[in-house]
Length: 255
Image (cartoon, rainbow, N blue to C red; front, top):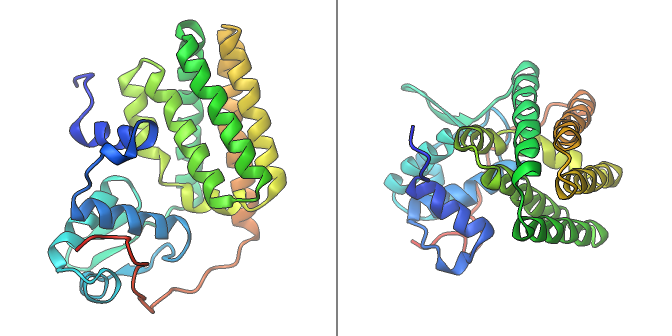
């Protein structure tokens, strides 16, 4: 495996941490971005069929080809499952799936944080401090969507600058799969305060070049998300499937 970023990763990273205006999304990518957001927000729930014709004609007002390609993109991100001869559905994660994902993320996040403590630069620290400030502002303004988006970008920045391409690829590939459940966790303000404090401890350890403390803080950050996720899942009733496909908001895609 080469260490160089693929074209898709480079585009995503530029949109997340660089200048989004410089990114040109294809129509399937636009559809995938919008549909992925709706899955994370719970508009489409786990197990719900994603019918190409309905999405194309009613939701996005495009041909079926771009929708089909968008579903493949979301399948590669773990948000959609495409079943042979039965079509696509919103991915369903079992309790054991979620536990395994978080366990792997905790180990890798601790490793990346430890490595970064040994190799961080002033520029990296500035980005991390700016990220915590932005997350705190979103929390104070009670803007859940902005809080999650900012926290996700911050969470993906750490493995990007951590220096290990293999760890980065695995963390990024797992990053979006649990966002739908994580969003429910973020609706509880006390949980958000826990994450902000965990991030402050993590960045402090990286700033002080304390690799052991950074590893512990990285693992704790992920494990605390998992513990709150389990509580939310245990308390949440099964959600009804949404079979009424309404048009995506104007500007979501460009036919």
